[in-house]
Length: 425
Image 1: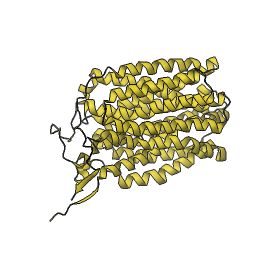
Image 2: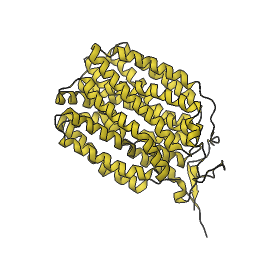
Image 3: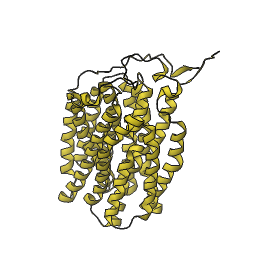
Image 4: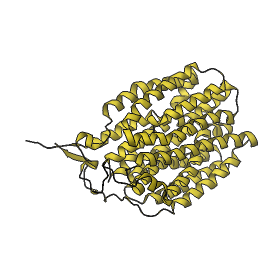
C-alpha cells in the first residue's frame, strides 16, 4: 500500500546544490580577476596586456575544451564531468603557492584552470537542471545561476581582502581549499543526474511531449541543429556581447583606479557588477518562463550597450558605477538565456554539445575582448578606443536577437496557482 505525501520537488534541491557548485566555480577565476590584475602586474613586472593574456589563455583553453565537455556530458552524464572536474579545479588553485616569478608559469596556471573550468561551470550544471525542469526551466536556470551571481558579488571583495592580507598566491590557495572542502562534498551528496534516477518526472508532473528518443530527451540531432540559421545567429550574438561584457569585467577595477578611485572602491565596482549579475540571473530566470526570450535578450543587451557608453564617455566614478551595473545586468542575463534558447530551439537531445558550443563561443569572445581592452590601453594610454568597439558590438548583438523566429520546443504554459510541490510516493 502506497501512501502519498507532499514535499518539495527534489529538483529544487538539485538547483540549490548546483548554485553552490557554481558559487565556487567561475567567480573564483573570472569575476575576481580584475582585483588580481594589478598585484599580478606588480609581481611579474608586466603590463596590462601581458597579464590580461593570462585571462585570455584561460578563456581560450575553456572555449576549445567546451565541445569535448559537451560530448562527455551527452555520452556519460554531467555528474561524471562535475565531480572529477571540481577536484582538479581545486587542486590547480592550490598550485598557486608554487608559482615562480616567471610569467610563463602564470600562463600555464590560467590555461590549466580554463581546461578544468567545465567541471565547475554552467554547461554541466545547466544540463542537469534543464533535465529536471520543463515548464519552470527559466526560473530553475535563473536560480541555479544565482550561484554565479552571489559569487560575482562576494568574490571580488573577498579576494581583495585575502590579497591584502596574504598576497595573491595564498588567496588563490585559500579559495582552492574552499572548493575542495565545501563545494565538492555538497555536490557529491546531493546532485542527482535526472529525475528518473529517483523515479520522478520533470517538474514533478507527467511530460507533455511523447516524441522522445531512446535517451528520453526531445530534440534535434546535433548535425541538424548545427546547420540551422538560428544556431549561428545565437552564436554570433552571444559572441559579440561576450566580448563586450567580459572585457569590461576584467578591466573594471583598473578603469576605476585610473579615474582616482581607491583599490577598495575599485573592488566595489567589481562587486557592483556582481550585484547586477545576481539581479540579472534572478530576474531573467523568472521572465524567461513568461516572455519571449529573444526580446528579453535584446532588452538586456541594449542596457549593457548603454552602460558601456557611460564607461566610454569617461564619466565620473558614480556614473561609471552605473555603467558597471548595466554591464553586469547584461552579463547576468546572458548565461541564462544561452541555455534557455538552446533548449527551446533545439531541445535536450544534444543539449550538452549545443550548449557547450554556445557557452564556448561566449567564453572565447570574452578572452578576445579582455585582451583587446588591455592591448588598446597599452597602445593608446586609454580605454576609450576599445570601449567604442565594444559599444558597437553590443548594439549589433541586440539587433541579431530580434531576428530569431518562434521556439521549436515550446513548454506548456505554467499554472500560476500550482505550488512548487510534487506528490511523491
